[in-house]
Image (cartoon, rainbow, N blue to C red; front, side, top):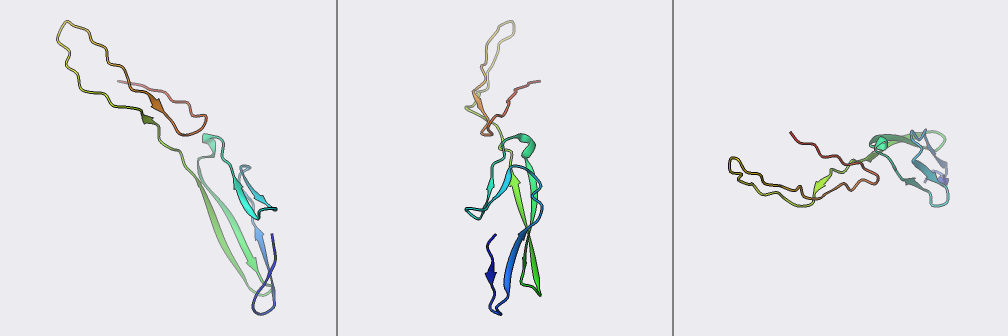
Length: 110
């Protein structure tokens, strides 16, 4: 991480605490976090401590990276149907999708 000098002439150092997961990486070239969750196991909040110190005083900040699970969706709608007694009709389900990469989508009914 780069160093800076405050208005009193002290060198301000920045440190990053332990990064709790492997899909968050500090990129020393861009000086930014590269965040690339790849599994439903990555869903949730992940905290990283950031610290500044000028030799005599310090300040801390907690960065929270929230990985969200996007809800699956129906690709259309179904209309209500009337089925007379002793007859058979078919109702197809509309298409489904899940925006999360690699998601397994299952449909159940009762």
